[in-house]
Image (cartoon, rainbow, N blue to C red):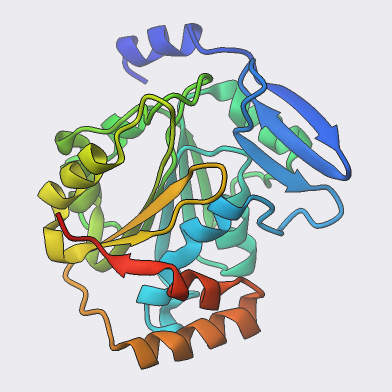
Length: 255
């Protein structure tokens, strides 16, 4: 880490864990939920918005769902990281600024140790996407970056999203969680569109909690609706995710 990153790390809030009705929750020193895991089903994606973050699966060829490199910016409770690593068996990298989050995920949320397909990096996501040697290294990118107050995304400017675009390989897909009382959905989507192009942006309806997932593609032709419906059925059968529901609530974004 750089000196500025180490300084930020020292100011990070404490990580706490709670449990209710068989679900374990991760918090950053506040009641806001930063992630969750059903204790008896540690690979199940418990939170609805986290399930929707996987809607990138609709935009990739069925045979590619278990191939390539998946990157997560923001570990949360490691739900997406575990799913990509254990269920999809992709090469998986997660970048998390708070070392306590990594430690708690390994102790309480069944995050495995690094292996030949899993790398968890303690570091700044904004710096990670700007590393020139990582250009075009990710096939899937999931961005979920919030501080302890969950007021708005921590990284949400055009420069950051251009870094995300550089990180993605051609044919890649990014999913972003947009949420928070101080967040501006339209402003954020316009910044994503400035980096990826307006024609590359898809938006899902907000969850009841207010999370809106945005998908952005890079040099990827999206097939007709009938093909997407067939892909959704395949995803539901193979991975028990509500892909048909995602498709019904997904539409192209227009400014």
